[in-house]
Length: 301
Ligand code: GLU
Ligand code: ZN
Image (tube, rainbow, N blue to C red; front, side):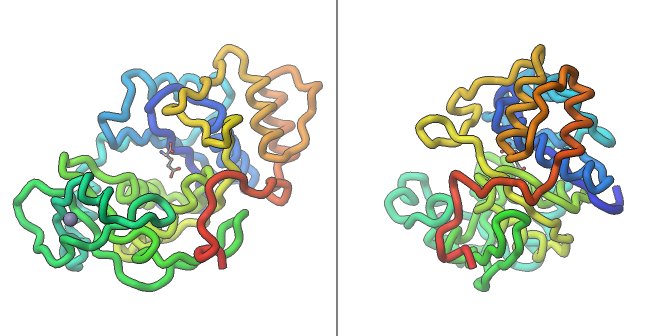
């Protein structure tokens, strides 16, 4: 698909039913796309088989439908995109940016220091040549800061080589990394605007770096506040966040809109009325500041 105008997307991982946190991301990205007269696509991020729960993708899509979301074009499934990820990996191999790594989790847990998003690979295998052996493949990350302007968080500047280090492109079991898959697929779907939870803010510099190496365009990014549970942790399928009730869309839609800082009209009684009200009140300038995981001060310019 060619990029024309504004094109947003919602990219859930089908590790469980749609929960309130993902509803917020779906609603924010949808309203932002439609407010600009743009398109909105859905991609199922089922790239990591052990995390995929059978039936969850259909369940998420049915819930989105029940909530009145309408998406453009066919749903993309990452589980069918291996060929495209292979092409991207080949390109990085030709740039001499890929090497095999056989370091164990235990070794890394002992050796690696913590960066913005977990352990920073210490570079142990960096000099190795790609070969046939069964190993994780890592990107040899160049030094230099990645700088971008987030639609809500402002200017972000991150030295990926220091904050993340050489990150994994494909695991030793053959599973493609989220970072590689999301970059290849955002480009394939012609996404111009990525609106998603701020829990992914720390991933964006790695994704922009991959876009540059692969010669792909960089979309605009806006990272929304993340819904936290009473302990201050992100709501996620892993922490068994409660699913939203597909039979009662209105209360959840109203709560998601209110969470995003928009005024809600309690006199709304149907999903159709909700959507016309939500489109009318949506304005990114009303979004509340981010709560939850942020980049360290070093990355906030
Ligand atoms: N699949 C990711 C998640 O469900 C979102 C990826 C993205 O929006 O870039 O957390
Ligand atoms: Zn290694």
